Image 1 (cartoon, rainbow, N blue to C red):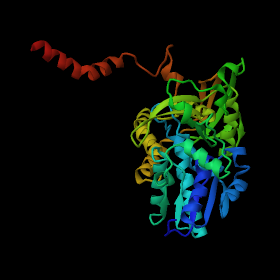
Image 2: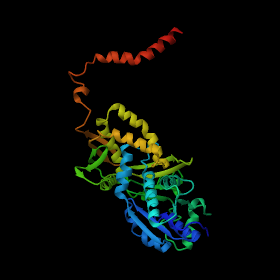
Image 3: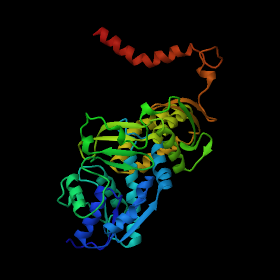
Image 4: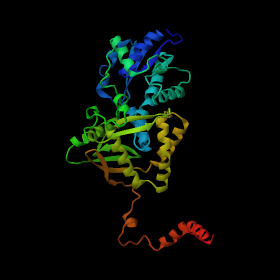
Length: 402
């Protein structure tokens, strides 16, 4: 038994790790443990959470509906930046962790708890994301990371521990990969997925149908944007959470948004992750489409140069860092003119931009046309080319002289 802790708030999902951690915290610290479950759009997964937490030893359960806050204050700012990690990952798990940790710290203050705990392993990124946020928002809070304290070495041992104590968990030795779901995506990792050569079983996917089983006819979707934020789907204005949920439904039935990648974790190792992000995939394509006709060239290029840095900050857990706030202010300034509508075409796993329009468009057929025009003198291009080639011409002449 450990001492020095009077009350703990645990980020609890009801899955394998946090179910066992709840029991372990109660046994190890002999103090009240409040199970906090964040509703980020995982749906039916929360139906039995309260009952299960109480049965496993929680002194109290807090289930908070954070869906609108999650999409409006975390997902949308990230999508205004077109954030993407290593060219593929739309950061669905990464962006959820700072909100969960923020609310956890708030609940600890409300409940008089002096410690917080999470279920992230000592090998992953989530431990960093949770704990950096804890420290940024309450530097005095005590942090308990069971995976770095207990003697368990594998999830197989956790399954045996759960069985010995009668704790029901949704993971078995036959299906040992773990998953994490919210309104933006669902992720899968570990277990049979640790072999990067092995193709995921089709039965694993839950948000998207197989592209092979998707409808034989394409579907067109129109998305309206204001200041870089999506506000309507096919002319219907929706709240942020409703909009993302709607696009998940549409994209899911066409098999859009599957990613299978080996990524570089912040802690230094490579990890294989499989993701489903149907609505987010549609949003990113549509957003870039509206940007293409409403953003100034140099502003667009400057913002794009910041995307890798911004994405790394989100992935590594620095959402509440001053550098992310500064980048966000710059990015948001670039979005002031991003108003308009994008039309995308969904077909058997693909999402393709096929139309874009805006009252604030910088695109002009008078200038871009290949037909006769009165606004552009093609002869002017000769001097433009000569000036841009001057340094190359000088270098070539010097090389020839040598």
